[in-house]
Length: 420
Image 1 (cartoon, rainbow, N blue to C red):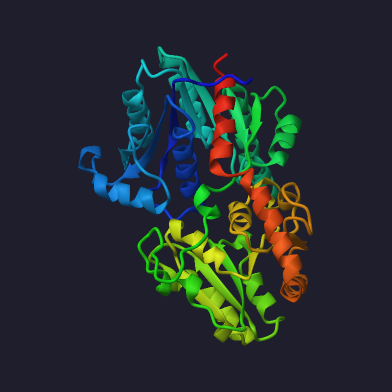
Image 2 (image 1 turned 120 degrees about the vertical axis):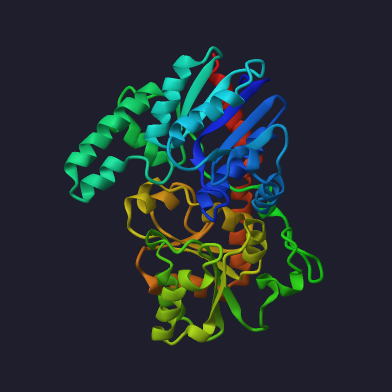
């Protein structure tokens, strides 16, 4: 049996933007909240940039935002304010030092940038308690590859040198996509031990949505929620996420104009407070294509309300572009959330999706930049309800293996293995 950390401390060595509409930031808060609940003796601290001094931070406001992400504050899970402005790195280091409890067991410093990982390594040398430094890799794990493709060769070489130093100095590397490990082995021999931990989703995505008259977690009456704003006879396609170019949401408009009038597209996403600006390009494209009346933009939704939005779909769409991150290095959060919702999914065929799901088993995969193929896949799902239900059922069963409690239990065992 793998060892278990009976008592240990985890510090996410990064000044998070908080509150945030970033899916990655929300996922980090959810994951480490799950880690704090993975068993007794785990104490987690996350740090965020605050415009006010830490003593002036409003704990009630922090609690409200954390709850909107599906987490709760407790003694074992805290967010610590680090004032914004100059000397931010020094302030972060001092905040971590102040939060370390010598009696609470081994310390794990988790970093997600090269700069912070090196700062954590330097801090490791200063601590009198056992410290392990973990480097987490996300969507841009090897910046030198992107910079080289952009023709910025000198900067790419410097980034490569910095990465080589970090990957050998840290105690372990957590990868979210299998190609990350392949590239580490090829480009950085002698790197620290690795763990493959794809993204996933919390248990809230597996719960059935509220019935009419009930309320969502955020307090929105279910009767007024987008999930229930449906018309009989229409087939609802849905997308939830940011409108970044590498996610290619505009292809959804090109797909819609290839489908009969009964197909409608609902999109939730963008930044909080920026519903009009974030979707302006999509609205303009829909008008140009003559499908604006079949497009509904719901703007930013509180993260805890996203599961209800997804469960109200007839089909969920996941487009990805041709960037290096989209092709190889992303572990698409939406893919796990869509699958957990129990609705059929159509996703872009990329190495990043093919290494997770099989075409026709957990999702239908279509070529990138091919709205016609995307439309055909949607019509196949609409024409065969039994196939759609079976596809969704297999996807939900697959997603259960990536639920937060399952992933964080594995993470806890990995951390225990690093304590010797």
